[in-house]
Image (cartoon, rainbow, N blue to C red):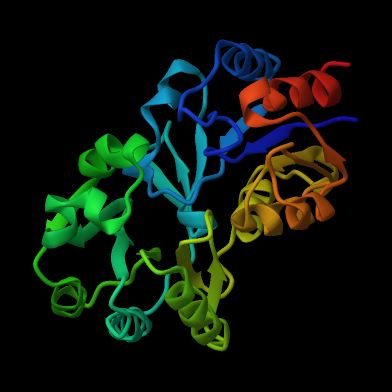
Length: 275
């Protein structure tokens, strides 16, 4: 194999269940960077919300953010590719979410994330995982009304993220949004819904970056564990699912590695890049 780009999911892949980058995974990623391979974090998070753990790995230049809606070049500090939803679509989404009592909403715009003042003041009461509260507060800006904020600036979000306290409501809302042809609907965990423009997926973002770097799918490896990783697993020439991934995700991968708590990422890097 002649792999030149490695796209890695964050939570449940590069990061373990404690939301940290293990020494083994760090060493493997550094080895890949030193070998001249593009190591590209592919995250559902906005650029300013990427985990500080990534700072441990030097030499990472390109990032896929907001589930591929944005491709960012850190060296040049500029967006190379973006696939944004319209302002009107974002307002329709926010209006729909308001119909569900247990739903909250975050809006990602220009690499930043905005949330309601109420959720920012009480993140745990809105279902934010204790491991993520610190990063949530660090990476969010509160707004009294997200709809007024979006409407007032005629803003075009990268993504709308919703967290539900009631799983039944989440599934009902998922069915509603899945019928909207303008949207790509995905999730990281069962209680979330992540909404981007129809063509804004990790696969779309990865394809755009590979094109800019003159790379073919055969020269790209992708590894992930979640529903939002499926498009990039389908596009990459070498696709690897984590051992902790669901059966659905594993069916979209050519190979399955160990779990995120057993350095599955490092083992996959060693096997496919350096064996």
